[in-house]
Amino acid sequence: MVSEPLISTDYWTDFQITQQDVEYLHNHLFELETPLTARELVPVLIDERLRAERLVTQQRREAGGKVYLPKESYHVDDDLIFPALNWKHGKVTAIRAGTNPEIGAFDVLTVDLGNGSERLFAANLTNHALNDQPTTVEDEGFDSDAILREYANALEKKIESAFQEDDEIVRIAGRWFPRALLVDVNVGHLNLAEAVLDMAGGEPLPASALLKDVALPEGVNPKLAEFSLNLALQEDGRFDEVGPAGKVLWCLRRLEPEEVREVPLHLQYSPVEYDRSALTPQMLNLEAQLDDELSEVEVNPNADIKEVTVALIYPHLRAGTLPLSARVRPLFPTAYESPRVRFTLVDGRTKQRMPGWVVREHGYVFGLREWYKANDLMAGSLVRIRRGENLGEVIIEAKIYRSTKDWVRTVIVGADGGMVFALLKQSISAELNDRMAFAIPSMEAVDQLWLQDKKRPFEKLVVDMIREMSKLTPQGHVHSQELYSAVNIIRRVPPAPLFALLASKPEFTHVGDLYFRLSELE
Image 1 (cartoon, helix red, strand yellow):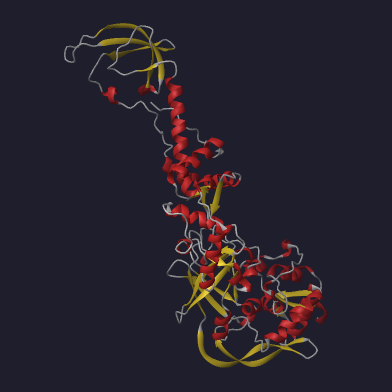
Image 2 (tube, one colour):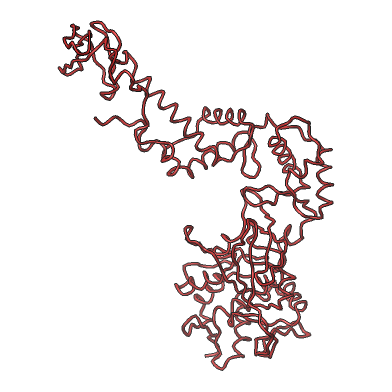
C-alpha cells in the first residue's frame, strides 16, 4: 500500500526560515563552538526540519488511539492505529480465543476499519513480525541527501538572509558564529597585530600567525580565538581581509599598492549613454571576444574554462593590470566578501612568482607592470591565462620570440598635444593581435592626453580617430576592433558604446565585416 508523503513536494520550494530555525542553528553553533558557513549549516537545518516534521506526523497519526502491536492485550471499544495499513484507525468490536495449536494461546480481534470494513487481527501473540516493526514515520522518498542535492543553493541563500538580519550572529569570510561566545579583543591586541603585519612588509598573514604575538586568554578554543580576532580585525579600518574564498588573510590597508586601493587613472570609465539594441549580432560576438571587464557579457556558468588568451589594450598595459572579464573571472581566486584578494601570479615560461591582486569590485587584476616591461609587451600583445597547479596561483604567459623589426601603427604625440598615427618599423618580441597592436614610444606623452582630452565629446573623439587611422590604408576604412584599441589609448571606453555609436549615427558608414568609414570621405 502506498503511504502518504511525509512532506509535500513544494515544501522545500516554499520553505521559509523561522525564528525557531534561527534559534536552533544558534544552539548548534553554541554547542559546536566552531564557526560554520551557511552551506555547512544547510544539512543541519534539513535534518532538524525532517525530525520536527516526522515527529508532528507521528503525533498526528497516533492521536486518538493505541498503536497496534500483536503482543499487546486489547479490549472491546479500544481505538487502535495500524502502522502497516498506512496508519489507519479502527475500533475493536469483538474478541475471541484463537484456535491454532502450533502457536499457542492468543486472541483474535474483530476491528471495524470504517465504511463497513472489518478485519481480524491477532493479540496476546508473543512471536510476530509486527512486534519488532518500527512504528516511526519513514522519510518516504524525502531523504536528506536528495533534498540537499536539489535545494542546497536556495536554502543557503535563505540562511544567509536570515542571519544578516540577526544582530546576535556575526560573519567572517563566509563563516557565522554567535556574538555572545566571542573572546574580547581590545585595542592593545589590535596594535600588536598591526606591528606584526608591519614587519611582514605587506605580506598577508592568517589570524593563526598573528595569535602567536597577540596573546588572548589561555584555555580558549583555538578556532574561537581565531574567529574573534578575525572579527575584531574586520571592524578596524587599518586592516584588510584579502584571502581567497575559504582562506582568511590579513594585510595592512596602508601597505597595499595604491592601484589596489584606488582604481588607476587609465581604468577609470566615465559612462557613455548608448542604445544596446543597436548592436548587431556581429558586434555582440566581437564584444564577447574582446574580454573587456566593463562589457555586459555573460558566460555559460557550466562552461569549463581552462585557458583564456587576452589581447592587451593600452589602459591595462599602462596600469599593469588584466581585465577580469566574464571569461577570465573563473580563472582567478574569488572571495566570500573581500573586495580585494591577494594571490600569486606565476610566469608559465620562467616560473617567476609575483604577488597579484584581484580587485573584484572594479573588475581588474593588478601586479603585472614590471612583467609587461620585462617582456617588452605593447598594446595588442597576447597574454595567456590559466589556472595554477596550486590553490591561489594563476599562470600567465606571453609567447616570446627573438626580436624582429616589423611595420606597426605607432602613436606620436606632437608638441602641440595632438596625436597622430604613423606606420613605422618597431622591434617586436612577443605575439600580437595585429588589429589591436599599437607601438607607443612615449607613454608619458600619451598620459598627458588622458588629462587634457576629457572634455572632447565622445562622438568627436571617434570621428577624429577614424580620420587619423584611415590615412594609413588606401581604402580609408577602419575595423571596429582596431578603433576600439585606438580609442582606449586616450580614453577608457568599453566596446558596446563605441559599436552602438558606429551602428546608429549617419556620420559613420558600414562597408561590411565591421569595417567603417566616415561618411564625409565618400
